[in-house]
Length: 169
Image (tube, rainbow, N blue to C red):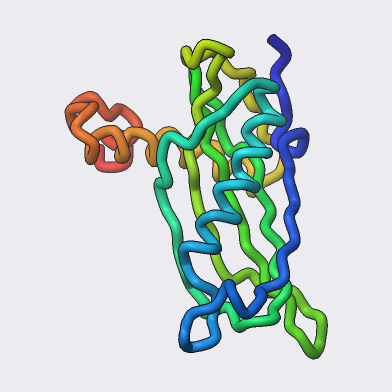
């Protein structure tokens, strides 16, 4: 299985926030943004492993800025780290100013996907090779995020989290 770079999984999706996507304040529903992020992350995961992928968890979402109706959003997703059968996908969300056309980062999220075979059994995924400074930083933080998620889910004991221990010792 050939290792892949993060840029090979890059997926870019553009959306216009339509009136039916907004809440009574005229801003994008958070749930609609979650749907769009899940779709773009799914395509990114599939590009990395070239198999069926499913969402395993939504590890982090930040709604930093309200997104007004009729805004143009650009969602950019790429694999930030590959584990044995799972992949962490980092999604950056940019909003385009309606008047100046300038893009500003407004949100981000981290999703985890698992690769499956045609019978629904988890399969190995290719290793990820980070190249840029940002990709390396996200790659290095991914194991800590995974261990913290496993501890919070009761699937790992705190003393087993080697990456997290290293932060405090």
